[in-house]
Image (cartoon, rainbow, N blue to C red; front, top):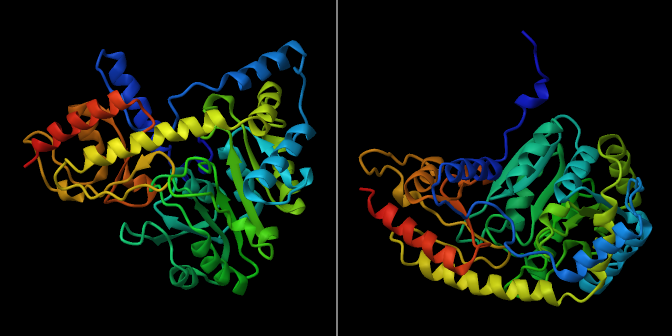
Length: 397
């Protein structure tokens, strides 16, 4: 019998993609499934960005691209960092990849050796832990709570550091919790990192623009830490460009070169047309992005109102991104006679099969008491979905 590589046993399929696949299978059978599982804006890419892509095709930008990205795009990314974050970067600090997920993979594989520890506050995006496992690193989960706003404290960070700690990995705004770190909170974490100069920090800022509580703060603003910080960002969330597949990092030249070397063997340079469109996305008027955020703000308010009408669910009001991550453990142990809810996976599957609403179980994000629901869907679908959820949960005794 043929034996596949052991690497396939180190990690799991993303639960987000698995739930989306199950939803599609039910739809194929004619069932009306409302998708609250995937992290994808339900908006179309703004017209001026699409026009830039069409022009790039007409101008014959159809050849292989440099591995780290076109120079004009890397310059545009530097302009964006200065404009939005007051951060100084040069093109040599930037590597463009086929989505922020590849950017994360590059950075983790470039930094983590077998047995080295990576601290990840829970809840976290499903792919973080699996990429660390692919690199043969050790995931060290630090559990946050709804009461702490789903944020790690300096004391928790300090207590989790050992002589094997290589990397700290987090997101702000956070997928799935919606937590957003303030400048004061980041400064408190920075105090700890200053005591441990050998620890790198990956800051995933892909939801930067989708912020409901103020301006975005990056931990890279602390200059003495900047050389060991890797910022992950991209176009999917803030510009409704999920299918265009473009992410990027900002890091020290040494780390950037390491990521470029890895990418040179995996995928080489990112899609040429996407890159040319990205230049316009990052340097033109951000009005379409802010209009999208305004709509997400309205949907957040609607979702919070509807969730409060469901008995037994405790919910943190997200400060950014487009998810809620409520504690649904009140329903564990309950049954409708046919389905027994023992955990978050059972809860999500029950909603999929009975309410025909897709969600993602909290275990995938490192928090088994919770389930993630997206509000990147129309207000009409959000209202319909939560009415179904409320009815389905009322049948559990």
